[in-house]
Image (cartoon, rainbow over all chains, first blue to last red; front, side, top):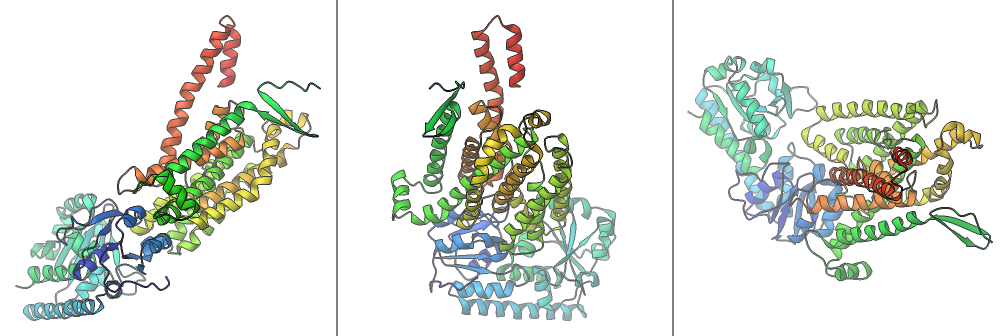
Length: 272
Length: 367
């Protein structure tokens, strides 16, 4: 959306998307303000964010609150805040990334560049990628073959599995571990996630199942279905290889810190 | 030279020209204008940062430390609220008058639903923000064209018109719901905010568009004010005095539809302004149908206040203006319906305590 001159070392940064909170904190920059997702609060997996002022929601940022923080850089995404770009760029230099999720590594590098920490971002990403390869390698060596990882998420009104282009799918893909055939979404236009009917819940089986829930309504769905017979009939459940994980880390977080924590989960639960 | 004595009206003559002014309407317009100025001042001065009236004025006329807050963040959307509020209200007044039904409004006759469906389609199909308003405009006009085509088979003053509108609106709304359910949550959330109607992120471009449409419609509106006098009559009476009422009604409806589509395409489906503003104006002026100038002013006041309350009253959560137009307008209309009918009935009662039957007829007439 045009070119923007940004300060060399921005100090007062406002972030308008969840992945950018992760990005800023991963690079050691505590934002002065952040937008929260819908009705939920700021993510908790990044530690204490009590110094960060909440400036509205992702789709409806509070422009006056942002202005009052007197920022010197605003990071947002075109996908969510396109209509606010003109006003935001009057307040401070504003950098928008195009998309969310699929392009998280490019976004991380661009945002890192804007924060004046392009090199650190590059290093962090490389560190993460080599750690992912190492973990995948040790898991495959220990097991004798690459196990298939199933990712399931309970939404308030439906159940999803995640494909190779969703954030957690990309991270698992970076380890080189396998995915159940259904979850590879081969040939699909949108390979981020697919939906599974509650009547076919047993099709999300794998060698390991990682599952989480979006919001309190998703939690109640999770409780209902994970105690049902279809869930219990899956081989991974019978083998005790099914693990509840943090939705913020695996799904909404998005960023190099969240990716690292997904690797932690894989390590903890799979490596003997 | 003694002119015809018109109760409640004053005749102003300049040379050969004369204008009849309804005195109460003129007073109400003055009061509403003052209210609008007060609302705009409030919207400019009060917010996340408090800006004094003097500083706001300095920013508008020259420079002040608050230029960014006033000129970029508050003024554009406030001007847009004035323009869109007026356009919606005028549209409501026109449609209510020709349908001879206080419930008829662009929300009911399909304009809002058509614009909503088109906007939801644009948002969930991933079209950019630049295509959103044109899509909504086209959707609103197309839906209204369909309603007018179906409704004008008879007379626009018959229930057929309103029924056609409701049928089309319900159909389009169910289409919108289907799109929302199938959409990704974040797209659906953006579409929801649009469907409620918001001024957040809108600015001069949108205000200029609605303002230009209002300006272009001004001659037509001046004509409409007079044309409505006879158009509001029932069919046989109008034909009896020699007015070609059907084509007039159609043109007035088209004018109303264009105004509503223009406003809705820029601010989303802000509901209830079009329904409430004409009724508020009519009850304040105590005229038989909505006076256009007072209606436009009432609509502007309503939308400016709704936008201001929405962005200031609920902490870091900004409420879209559309939520509050319904709340504010609805509450005020209920208040008017409950109090105004009662007091005038009491006044009648005091004046003519023995005229029981006349009192009753009066009350029936007011209802």
